[in-house]
Image (cartoon, rainbow, N blue to C red; front, side, top):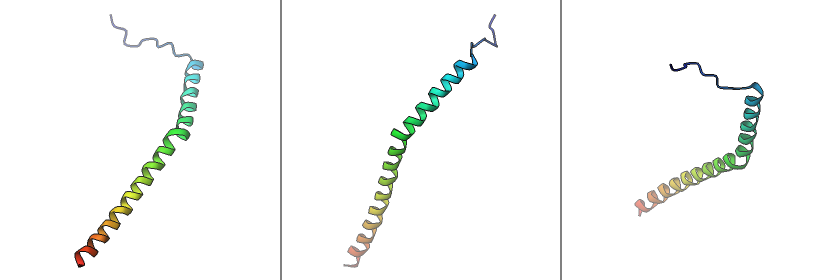
Length: 65
């Protein structure tokens, strides 16, 4: 027969240690990897928007001639 309520052997100290490792890893990765990457993405998007606006202005100037 299939046991629908299996014993997962989750000890409170083990879960606490695993959560501690998870949050510590997340904190390090957030500071070292995620935030710098997102800063680059935002800078690239801002530069792209700026260049699109500049090209639209240049197109308007070219159409005047």
